[in-house]
Image (cartoon, rainbow, N blue to C red; front, side, top):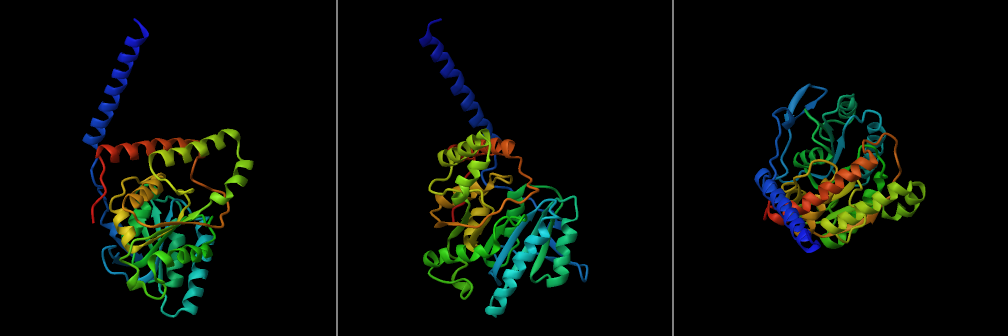
Length: 328
């Protein structure tokens, strides 16, 4: 068998495999995400009265300036310092701006430890108007937890922040300032004029990359750059850090993005920003102070490989129409 014929058969085989994968993805994928939520997950508990209260809906009008969504899986140790820093900053803002209102929603993603109990102590201290716990019955993944927290929020602006507190919470001010130009307003003063606009600001650790390369092994550095390349190739361009767990969205941006988002695991950030760019939502990227915190749930090598595969599937599913973005 000559080389030309071998190449022909090889190409035909690869094309048939690719076509089969595409057909399988179309047959097994839901065009728009199916968001399942048990009856229990539609309510939060007031630990003082033991009363169950139904969460509001993201489609409702906002009633507070800011909602902070904190996805947490087995975070009983790392959660308290994060909530202390967060509430201290927000309470101080309330003192200087009497009209400013906030809420924190801790989303326990099927935690098996005392995460819910720890979060309820803050509910007892501050009241459920300021902090609530969404207790998911099963582990969905970080993306699934963030989405359900977003769908339960009351804020004109919505921030999701990691439970480890790796990002300095006060850097929220930097994200807010970056949106004043595209939004032409200040949500802390005029939330009604902000909530229906579209804009996103994301925290970035790209400025710390040179330092992190110096402390990483060669193999992990190759994986990191490989992941960045795949993000650029398949999904998001023009942004240096898609994975920082510190992102601020207007209420309308959260609604249109999370209603179309399918991925519930680690790669959800990439799909979120992919959707935002496809919808031409303005995105600012702002350097934030970030510190490595012990106890990460991410296994670096395996997680990067898994996310790399997810990136390819995100691109392929949208390209062949297995997934679609809802039109608004």
